[in-house]
Structure formats: C-alpha cells, structure tokens
Image 1 (cartoon, rainbow, N blue to C red):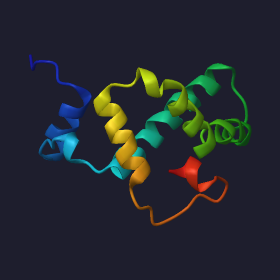
Image 2: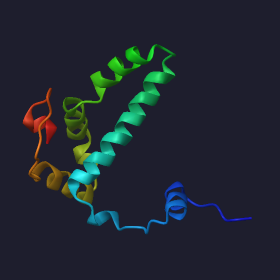
Image 3: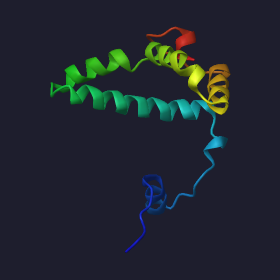
Length: 110
C-alpha cells in the first residue's frame, strides 16, 4: 500500500510538477492564493448557515470577501503574525500594482 501523501504532494505527483520553495513567490502571488483560500472559508461558513439560491449565497459572500474586509482582518491579526508573515505582508503592501479594485480604496486594495 502506498504511503499517505499530502494533498499538494499528490497534485505534484499526478501533474509531474516539481515542488517550488514558496518563499520565492512574490507577495502578489501569495495574495492571489490567499484570496482563493479566504473565499473558500467564507463560502463554507455561509453554506453551513443553510441552503439558499446560488445568487443569494454569492451576494452574502461578496459582502465579506472584499478588499475592505481583508484589510480590516489583517489589521486585527497583524500583531499576532510572525515577523516573517509581517515582512511578506509589508512586501505585498509596497508592491507596485497594475490594476485597481472597482469597489475598494487603493489602501484597502493593497
């Protein structure tokens, strides 16, 4: 019987990708992945509150999954973050962005 692999290790095995040191990723790449993880968590919490029409679920999700909420959350946990996490956050905040959010201030979006 094959030993248990982590989910990411299984993906690498199936797709033949080599593992990459995530510390080499840009802060914007972390933000891209982080947005997806945050949305999955919020969607899960909303669905756990009861089944509703997909449009209703989407409206509830988009009220929470937005730049303003994420900015408030990071401010709330910033002091509990490790020094390395704070450094990644600062690098992301200082990275030149090539787009802007339609419904968020530039500071929230960063």
